Length: 312
Image (cartoon, rainbow, N blue to C red; front, side, top):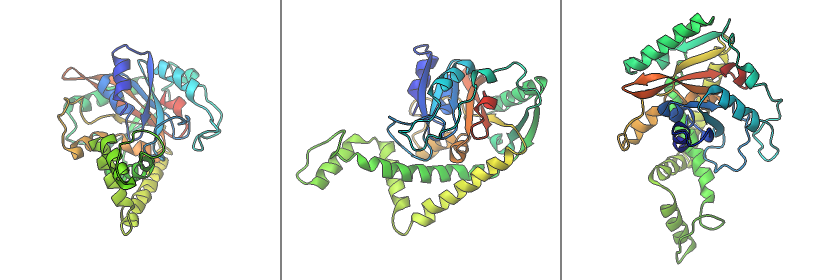
């Protein structure tokens, strides 16, 4: 959803751009376009003015040519905003000052085995291995870790995000603001407005979310997803007691051709490495790490909540 921002930066049309990362929508296009994509911790940047999708997941992020540019933009946009109840009143950190040549000395980096499955393209696996070796040469300790709940992140995310989208997008009814198409009765007007105003994928998510929230299914789907989300967050907390950073590929493949992934499930699987971070509310970034078949590959770094300086 922030592909336009990533493409604008990659094309040199902008020095930097903003995007919204709900399930990887800053880091994923950054990886596919060969630019830097930074997702701050949930609550670090105000969301005032956004068209809301999933309230508990949406985070304003930065796309830029370099990590230094991303740090500079974050230092401007981060901070408390009384107009956003989810924006936390915490002191700002020195993001630019965290960019030091010796920054990797003594840092412990974990590489989850779940992020390097056998079906991952060989080029991506080789690039991650090269960056692990580079990190060791710079003084870091790289170890294998396990995040076994990763496989549950995708269904958990799409249940929670779709449910929240269903509730949030109910306000676009043709009555208060936005598009309005005529109808003889109120219900006809609302149906015509929402039919014309929402695209196919948005309608699919509204339908899924409405079903998950409906009577008789709420606890079976949405409630269970929220419980799994808590377990995923606790799994990351435990991991960050053992390591300072978590590293792996951003996307399971380079950029795909327009219209190549008509199957929505195949499209959703593109987010398999980015979703867990949003469910846990932690920070992370995607940086260009090489090419496969001439197309950019991104490397993802994840840090504990409000530990953007270490990620940077």
